[in-house]
Length: 154
Ligand SMILES: [Cu+2]
Image (cartoon, rainbow, N blue to C red; front, side, top):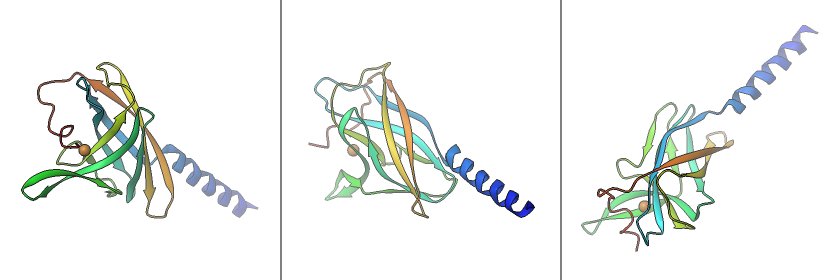
């Protein structure tokens, strides 16, 4: 009788752990768009407790969302869409730094400072289990140092 109780308790514990979420996102933000700009870059920091990868990004704010890396090609920096981005267990990955960034393509309306933009990251763990991670990125004012991201797409 006691054995069954323990089995039940352990099963319950593992379920509640999965629900608690093994992926945390912090410092999510995007820069406001300039007039005529139809894409935006979201910066964020993400940590997974287990080996995993981001396999998809989506946002209701844009037609599509992609993870890009910057690559040197023919002496020029170009952006390349990644199918997935690896997350090593307990290692923070910064998107928006060192070339990798998250891009909203085909914005349905401009990103305005003070608003926020919601996106969903689909993370898959090495055991094929998936977790959808909701992210709310705060939109910060546009400044002079916009970067080249938005110009290199076209
Ligand atoms: Cu990009």
